[in-house]
Image (cartoon, rainbow, N blue to C red):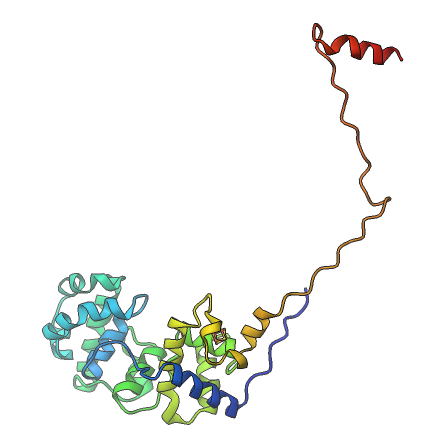
Length: 261
Ligand code: SF4
């Protein structure tokens, strides 16, 4: 099988220019998870796994009113938590993670959300993406969350070329100033949701001229050469087998005559 040739990866200047252009298409990009502090965003981001921001925002106002901090959440039982988060899906696992996260926040950090990657990812239900969301949006620590949208958009545009979220994060962080990390992620997330979907709406995209993926879709695949059909290559013509007329039909005498010739 022929090896796939990757497009040239964009330079730092090209990456910044592309993200500037995308920012004009999505000027209000920011997390769409409703929150008023780091604790609420941490809870909302855990709930958003395998769910949509709209579903999470549908349950969090009542949830935050009942559990406004780590102490209140740690005191709840999972049986109490589960019915309140059903619409977000995977509610049993999420209830366990939320309660465990709150308990560890109390034990290790006095109920405060730590502004540090290692401490955050030690909490149940908190991976690198969730930690970056909380750090970048509420704690003033630059973070570049990479979800499936960022993976898709960055690779299609060749501003990153990597198979894992950690590699994409590392490549983008290496070329962007830290102050731009969080907004770059939010912009790509919105672009992935609205325009660069799995089936992309390239004619509506402001960076279509810089996109190798769009170029590859536009150029038709080279036609496969058709094998020349020569007389020798043609399958031998076979005459259909002669039908035997049924005795007593009008065709029977004709068939007999033909047989005699
Ligand atoms: S041109 Fe198409 S594939 Fe490229 S980033 Fe825009 S929407 Fe995505």
